[in-house]
Image (cartoon, rainbow, N blue to C red):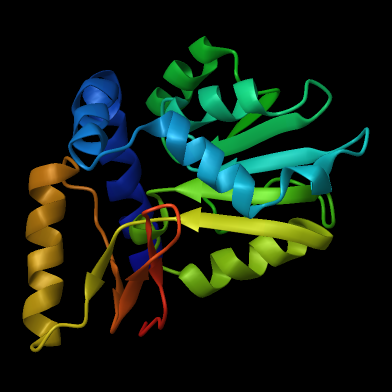
Length: 208
């Protein structure tokens, strides 16, 4: 019951946000010193592009949004590589469809991936996991659809471990209401992090 209410609130929030999403999100990334092109390059670097050189390769994106990441993934991927993805928001998917970046998209939650087992060479996602309530179920689904040796690249926001966990959950939802049109959120907590060779921050130890 709670999971259904969570997903319904998530869908409604991102439906409301769809028309303004690009204009609001891209400047935020720019202020951090990077954009979706650099993000796509880093993601594909982590999944090792040479690993998906076979004729029937498929990359699957979780939370395609308006297609900001997918547009650059498509430009960087070989033509024979199939790019598919899903989103919980039908309005976001409409905008993603205008990019023509995806071979196929699905209106679905990430808790039940609408693809067959062992069918994806790589699963990628950017700024989506913090919106998921049942992350363990999503990870189980990801590993179900990945081929043996397949790669997973997740990029997301995170928060350092709070001194007062209950207060931190409240802050999460205040930030969500303010920054993500009321979409419920559950940020990953980490104790420590380090900067990688490309200037990004990599999690050393995940708390929950």
